[in-house]
Length: 167
Image 1 (cartoon, helix red, strand yellow):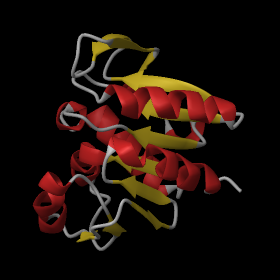
Image 2: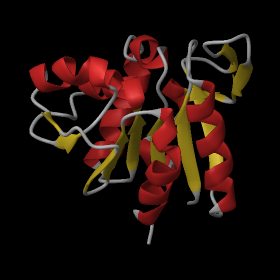
Image 3: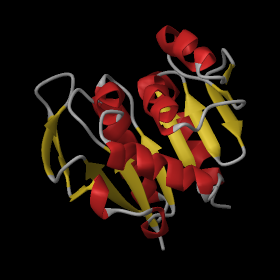
Image 4: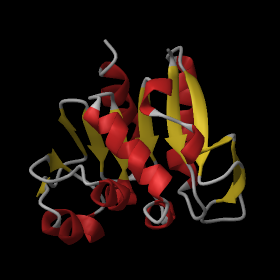
């Protein structure tokens, strides 16, 4: 199994979808873009990207790992039980789970942050801490199979750390 899921919803940060999409391919994996439904979703700009499959049709056993991009999409992702279920399943199986910027919101709703060291965009620090996370003001934080990043500017280090989970 060499498929890495990338979650998608409207108002995603374009950089946080496109960069991981191509980096996982360069590393020999196949990206699978997963939305609340198959179809086109728009970023924070008019740029669109296509989800190939609905989250309800995907199980953790189908994926080698999962990336949750940021932007404002995670606030929408967390409203879909199938998306938060998938995050929780990946985490429970200790498969590589990556979260960028505001993606911590979706991790909170999936119930996977309590007692864990992680990072995220500074504006969600309080949300993460209130959910029991140990927030570190660092660009990238690795805790076992969980890799988190503060911002799109951290994508090179984030992807290097995420892909290293497969070594």
